[in-house]
Length: 159
Length: 422
Image 1 (spheres, rainbow over the protein chains, first blue to last red):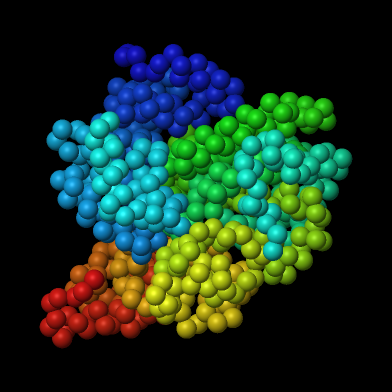
Image 2: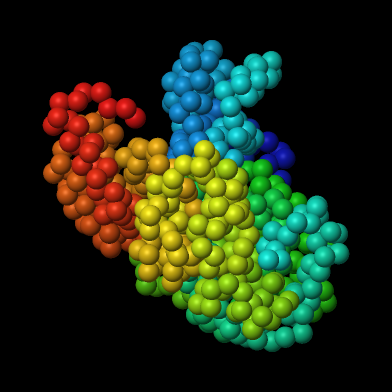
């Protein structure tokens, strides 16, 4: 079994075990830890989680594929998520999508060949009052204009 | 009106500031009361859930068994993901201790062993804010064993979701905490009999819980006098779309929608006419701009107008809005978020989206309007959870109130027009 979780996370898991009456309830926390460390959740990692929490591999696979935020394949270094739901749509998310697609040379749902960018369309992120918005990782960028998108891309480019 | 949920106090997220402004006073007061007296107070206050269904919170608490051999759980629903809803995020950021105080009050009232706060995965940053506040509350002795020397113990765990709107449905939320796919459960049994791990469980929305310290501090009678008599209290209204000042505004329930749009949210850019509003998040029935006169933000008024309060996420659309585009996007959302358990919802949401895309492309047929209605009617009421209804209502109401929009789009095709401006 490959080493899938760091010491830090294994220790954190031990603490979490005390808070939940069942091992299986650690599913989402463990999957989050794996994704944080590896960027995605591979089949090997899912087998590891299955053994760790004493549930069948199929159950872990079922969970991973159910939740939009868990990724089975590596994404680009910068994952840009654009909300196109109603409140963002009414405030010009289409312009933001178009601009990102043309600047990055990829369409929604694609990852650039150099693995630098992944562009995703997402459902409402709870930024309706500050629309349009994009999220990069956990960071929200709100009340966006195409000029601000350019600035943000330039900052990410340097990272 | 004075604000109770999101008062304008700088750094209120810090425990010192929260305490200096009367924080955790309600909890200290409750420790001098019997648990059932706390529940009674919440019941008498008339507080109704702020998560969408407007169910009386105190009544829900009374469903919990007083004596139980099994541990009792509370789930706090912070899976805020209904399009147009962004209020709980403000609480997590600006007043997390009010939430924590509300949770320990609820825990005291119902004899809860552990409370799980389920926060949507996209709110990773806000999860950390809440965790920091929780660590402070624990170190100050408000959470954990033998709280403030009272002999009462209760725990709070923050559980992060992973991107699934359906997990905001209470039984799906419990399945998600238990480490499974977020499939809703068949009811009965109701959560108060058999919830998390088969134990008695209550599920309350973040904002509902935040009203509890306000009620305990000021008394049920005082609270019941705020806003609409049958749906009282302060409410967080999120205004988005075509307004000059979108945002979350705290106000008493029962204010006219037009006052919310024009006074709080600064009116419509370019002084345009309001074509339509969705009053309480994308699943609530759409209203025509002309029918808004006299309609207020409370359960009764919106019901009478043919819609509902939902999450009080008010989406405003001006006269230039393409409503076909709006309803197509809403239907895409419900198609994406259907968990796939029930056939009417799994298949029906996809059919609705497909047909609506035909209208969007200008390829809709007049008979498709009735087809949409027929599909929506066959989803509504025929599924395990309310997601099916949530997918049907916007389509039904859009056709009922804006049939002309569909007809015009369909007609354009028969008239031979191939270019339809979107």
